[in-house]
Length: 361
Image 1 (cartoon, rainbow, N blue to C red):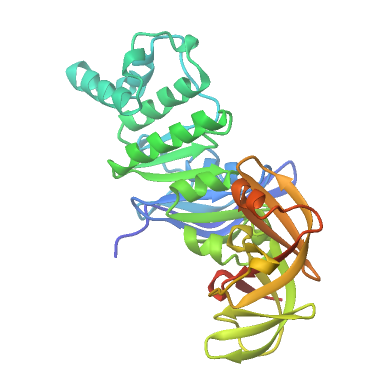
Image 2: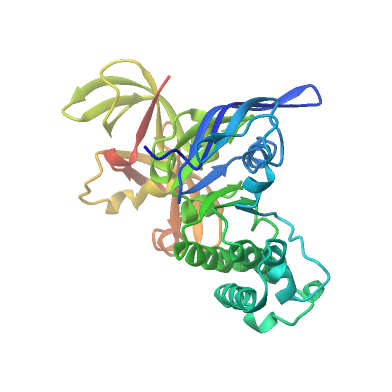
């Protein structure tokens, strides 16, 4: 069996007498994109520097391609198989071309091979026209493109990214995320990236690890983490605003009946009859209709309520509905206007049984 490209075992890091990282195990498979998602101060950047062999853990080991890198092992040959991009681009006061060529030069790649490789990655990141420009004259987005081109140019086995798009404005971030994903698709590079932005994880990750308080609270395929959070804390961080305390009161086939307040809602694949649970529904999975206009629907859970609050988010409205308990929905601005939504408006809120997820309490 082929070993993981990177494997952490029993990793802890203590700084200033305080334990900031505790990761019993983590494997990064060759060719995958793993995104470590967590709030500021959760320990995700510390984990990244440990995996990148830039920080020795207080306890535990890192294995690279099956070889444990213990005390006394020369780490330089392994670091040369890696590349790292930080939030703030680290560029020299030379031309864009020379910055991208730097890693190749340090690895002894020169001449036409180096020129061809640099030109290739400049074009892939859309900065070929900037090759002769001083790096000091670049915008933030252009500078980060140079950093990414330099990292890809050395052909790393694994690329580490520490909040690479965090300092960019929204349009620049979206454009660079798109171009980075396209560049990654044409390579065999393994990626480990940390971010606090859920949208970046959704756009890039094959697997997501949610880090909270120095620990990996959940690691799984991206769709599993975002649809089936393992805990209330994970649910809250990944944007599941509806986390409703309830109790399973029955089962009918693959549907569990869950009592929330004085309502009974249906959820696919419940955890058996009986027992307290948290019922989780993402706000984008809640549909609203004017009560008098609510027609047939495939949703098994339909709740009458009254709009208590609307938060305008530009193209979307965040609508809080009082159904005997608060239920949050996201609707487009156009839909909200067509329904004439406003505080006090009567609506029917619904969600499909397959859209809900139960967490045992």
